[in-house]
Image 1 (cartoon, rainbow, N blue to C red):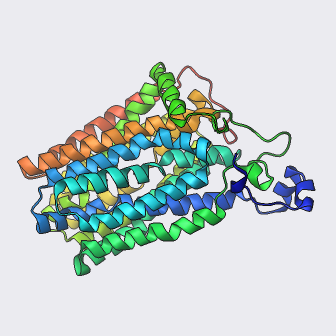
Image 2 (image 1 turned 30 degrees about the horizontal axis):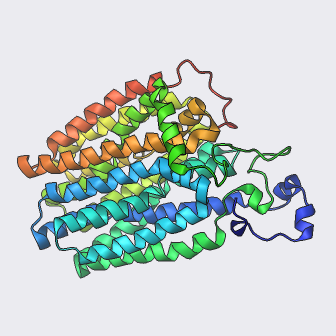
Length: 446
């Protein structure tokens, strides 16, 4: 650990035991969780921006949705593939430095999109640069922070951090849609880049890598030696790419890894890739203005904030396999009804938003829990990074597939129906995860 990342402590602080400092003060883990939430909120707002840009780019440049979807797919793919390497970067360079680098990269990349005039510009800037920057603050960040800083209430904290994606959507989408409609999409891009610049100094000032950096044990750990996680505290000599690739090799030989990755592939295909990218254009096709459609997504964000937080609480108390079965099954039913909601009465789309919104990313806390059960808390960052990579591969393929379907068939119906069917398939797959393993006692384990 680099000493420059640790706060200076005076003699009286050093003489205090970690146990006394945990009991007598507000635990710094909540500050770290708050900074992480802010960072994930900003990156979620950036990742939700393509839904706002598709129609303006069509109108200004004449690009087809299939063409624009390629850039979005590259972004989604790199967002996922960076996850396991980001987890290794957290170990090699520290969480704070990695987060700061990611926010700087995002600010530069999003600002540069205002200069693009060719489709390949969008693929390079939005797809590669923004995709890599957002991937460095993917869900592997949440998993790493939770497992380093919390022993108690891990599922609940993971649920809240995961819900930052919904909160970012809630905060930014209506604002960006209004700015894009009234002042042009470039103004919207500059606003979201400015948000990344604001978050950057907060990370530099308040983020810390480990509880021991502030003389504490993880939250909920009462005594004894500070818990260590060898895979995460492996020291400066470890090659982060080797750590990530070792995790992949381990996963390739595990049935649980394939079940987790396969179900999360379907999760990505049915959320980021399909609804997150194409719901606003689909609403526009049915005569619903962009600002109103963005408001619908924001409403779904409010519901998902509640649903995902509740999911984290439930994953501390109930079998995560059964939770995932319900989540995927209900999501599949809602997607099967979406084409009819779009073409039917106004209340139908509101009912879809209510039903789907509560379930949007509720799958993340129980998936992280099952990953920790299968591979150990010390490996959860890298292993969940690879599982999340499969999520984004599914998202990338779905974004391209849905855009191509719309371009050549004129609507999204087939894309929505197929997505609903594979979600129902996922609801049966997840029941076999960790089936031969005895689960950890609820409430206190990863």
